[in-house]
Amino acid sequence: MRPKTLVPLSAIADSAPDSGPRPPSPTAPPPLSDSELLDAYSRAVIGVVEAVGPAVVSIGVGRREGALEGAGSGFVIAPDGYLLTNSHVVQGAGQIEATFTDGSRWPAALIGLDPATDLAVVRVQAAGLPCAELGEFSSLRAGQLVIAMGNPLGFQSTVSTGVVSALGRALRSQEGRLIENIIQHTAPLNPGNSGGPLLDSRGKVIGVNTAIIAMAQGIGFAVPADTARWVVSQLLSYGRVRRAFLGIAGRSRPLDRRLVRFHNLERDQAVEAVEVEKRGPAGQAGLRSGEQIVGIAGQPVSSVDDLHRFLGEWPVGQPFRLTFLRGREQLEVELVPVEADFFP
Image (cartoon, rainbow, N blue to C red; front, side, top):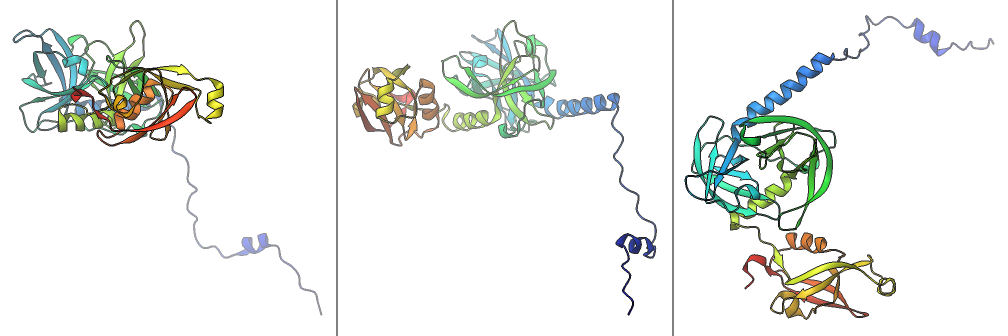
């Protein structure tokens, strides 16, 4: 019996009947030229400007009727006349006027402002207005294209472009609170840009331009849209942002290392209660001047900013536990925070 001859698989494949013409192998598209890339960039910016431009307004303010003394920017966030701008643009104004890109001028009324985030809402008595849509902070990336619109130095409907330089910056508001998750970008800003929108390439508002650093170039800041969305909801509901209040003045200070080890604390700093308002929630709960706050609602505390951050999110009237050191002893008390603006 003859042994079987083994045939290589390659030979079988080569001898297989032809099943017809094979499709051409895919090829990568040719790279775009520099001029084509610039054209695409220009079209993206033009598209955003044409879509959002009519919603961007110039905000004129005056201390008395008939005399406009300052100007900033703002933009429509609802078709029935609600505008978003910076708190420092309209704070203390006796007269507010919004000028649209078509030249129409409307008197505006202040709905509410929040100096802690430098945001404010005003309203004109108009309907069917073009409006801008607030986007999401979570979608931002460093290096992303951004477009700033506003009225710098009184020049209406000015457009500038740049990129996101950094995310998660922190900036002090005029009242000293820390505004977190600030967007740093390179779109040129000048006085008058305050309150104008910072937009992505799809025309979504990703921030509200709020500040520049004097004598610096390419460093601008914007309050993120997520913060603006929350502040707007508070201002429309209450005319103010409701924040919890404890009735203490504090400062950060280092803790003795022995206390940190003895109580197994997560941080080596605490907030010393420099002053305690006797009628305030902390004073009523028994906190005394000189004691050191190390925790709030189970979260470690090491700075006044930690307290502000917590109180900005905690519901007014809902109790929580405050942990503090009295000498070498660690104690806990239950507090019921009240609303800051309404504490007698």
